[in-house]
Length: 341
Image (cartoon, rainbow, N blue to C red):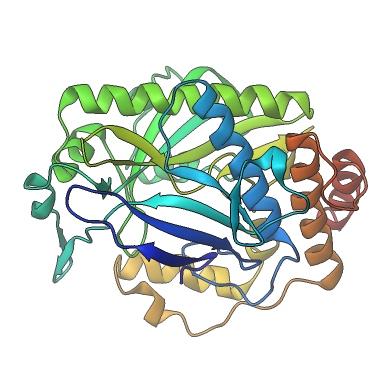
């Protein structure tokens, strides 16, 4: 079980052969690396499953390899177009997850130097088309862990700045807290060669282009998002996890967040969030034990409005009315009222 979805293993992956499993997307959600938050977002799991299936199928048509096998309805694996009703279950190829060993405050990735295929690459690739308020880029620039040259910028960016071309960022995937790293370290810890790094970048930009195009159709700006990848048994690159959802992407509508950022805005005002930020400064690995406050529940109206965003987005991205909701624009007008109080 993960913080936002569960996994049922039908066939274990081996060193040279992918396994088979089913993701059951839950109504749970996570922010700030905390894990499961106290609220559930009703029918979020079904909405996430449908949207991710849509993008996997579109990318397959573009020749991009993925781990997607179909969506499950009444025990049968189907294409999205064959579903009779929303489903929260997706069947996928399974790769091995090789977790780095922990030695004190150090992560040991040496196992990746020996592995040839059929494993999750321990990285998250982030594409950035703009730098909305709340982007980690501003915090990293202030701390000095990121330089303007890394972004290809001459001057310090401003919140809301649209970039002339996408920036690709990279972070760790299997550590207690995602850690931004440079491409040289990403290549080293994952056992990748230069051509594989370039292929990862190419696939990520293809994903970004597709999601940007589809979001634009809804009147949304695709600010940034993340991609996860792995190698199959032949060391061919494949996309894994989920794609194009409100959990993986940050969209805005006329400057208004259309993603988990809505919940983040609420929680940034709480004592719990302040404790999380301080704890991460003190201990990069075991920070959670230092947090004494628990996150409060979202106000009911805000939690319900966030659920409507997920469902309206799923309806409009897939061009099919799975859920009985107002239009995405109408839901976002309600969100705007709630988040400006």
